Image 1 (cartoon, rainbow, N blue to C red):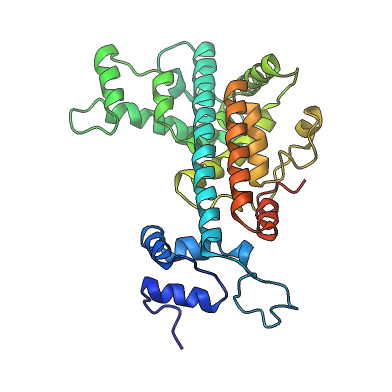
Image 2 (cartoon, one colour; image 1 turned 120 degrees about the horizontal axis):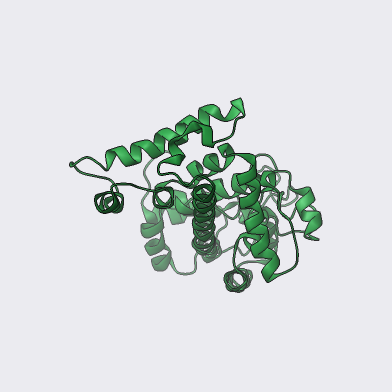
Length: 319
């Protein structure tokens, strides 16, 4: 018996799949796909919705595929997830740019002195945030310090700005912070600024749809949802069935927006996609929604109904 860790050629991999009930109609094309995509990433990553778990059909719980499952069905789910990642990442990068802009603008509006973001007194007075505040200040200070030197720099744009103006303001530096750092930055600023930034998002939504409010704690929750999904999308990990370990409380916001319970806080891909509407322009959201619908329709036409139902349930669309 072959050890699971033994090397297998692409042809041998296909033989294994056929013995497990997977139909392969074009072995040349399937071999070409395996050479590009990697057996583990493709099969182990996307086989689950196509496996037979019915004990009447598969009483011993062996790894068997549902009747009439084809290699191309698994590959269709793989392509769907890849396109979903690209679609989601594009929108989340827009949100990332949006909150960076709002944070830098509102902070600089309140604290106008040069280097005000390096002053601990310009942040929250709550002791529980002081450690994270100091980390943010240190990060910003190091960004400036490292680009004053004449040796190799990481971000030439910071060096160019400093050489020209002998100063680097917050609205330049935020562009070089990660979303995780921005999330922490938003947490440690004072409460008035936090509420103002949340209100800015609410105003944009109200101008395009209907009147709404957004609390700073709710924007905190949105950031905690967006951050891991943004990383999953950027690092080409499986996205469609990813969900946070614990749902994040947004029930009050769901009620204000007349959304079903769990639409925002369910911690699934559907939850994330529901949040896109809150943080995008109407034009961007309409385009995003149209592309997403097209992706789902293409997937539905490419796999069996039973597998499609399972995929949509795993993604949180079963509401």
